[in-house]
Length: 444
Image (cartoon, rainbow, N blue to C red; front, side):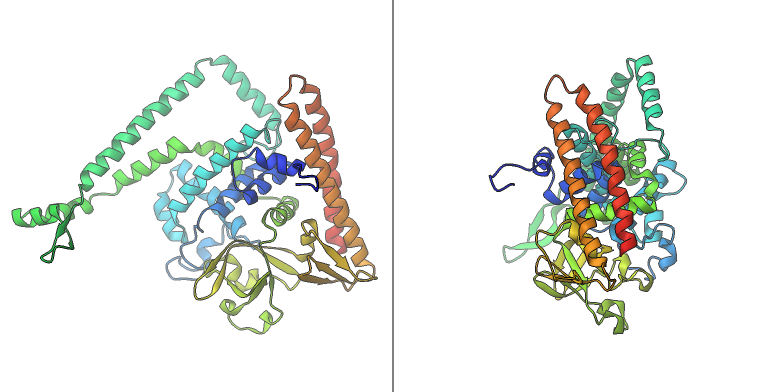
């Protein structure tokens, strides 16, 4: 909100999305740069529990070699994005059992299923709010562009087959009925659980069915049911996923789980603005500590936090540099404070989100929100860094204003001309923003 208690363009766009603030920021800002597809998957990865059931190097996951194909040095959300895309390939290709594949690489398939459902919900929310209605995201099949021709081809095919939607809905309704029948069958086979009272009038912990089976000599029947082939459960999970998730659309949205170098830097900048102030700085003595589990990180108001054992940043070759900070999606407090869903980002990227920035006369020391101090050792580098950050923030605000104009124009009758105007302004601002990003990295 502004000082006059009116919504800013970002606030108005967030109000149109039925998601939490952090996920909304991620989706809105990513849509400005055509990264809505990976952003929906990243938002889903940050919203669910970590899918990594085993820490890197454990015996159950057959060592870190099992994750080399999709492990990202940028952090857990990017690794989850690549793992999610690989899992979608396994599910859609049916070349390998997805449960066995997840067990081999140390992933929990149920978390990936939750990610797929959330990813679809986030994508529907973006489409419903108009964030992706005029080609901000590339829904191409191979992630290599050419989405205009693909969309025209799909539209042509839809025009030729007028009954396509009816057929699709009829198939979906049939799958939904089949799913309900299979769920009811599973509940019937499980039986009704009733606690039997013990001799003192309390719940004894056994159930009536077990006692009846023991009296009738049929105690092994329940054990045989529990040991039935898992094909039924696999079919049930596959049908549940087919009803709630479009695997082909999810694969296109994930873009094969890979981001280019420029897109990864851009996504990090978006993550900083989306997750701030969930930021932790590495302790200056981490380099002298032998074990990765002893690394300490300090967040605002919290000291001596550690990375979650399943985090990919626990690997020595993925450790954050002294000039980087940790972005975390969740803070878990037990006997220690653990940082979950962590990603690494340059410390100077915090200038894009800070509300209060102070510096000395030569801009060699920059204080961010009176908490984190940046020291710039290059002569004149601090001033150039502040100027570049200021230009980037202005360019982002300009993009948000343009998107807000488009958002308001959708509700009126004459908004076609506004679409082309906003597209031209968006492309110009995007090129300017990428140029400033390269200048900022070079200066740092």
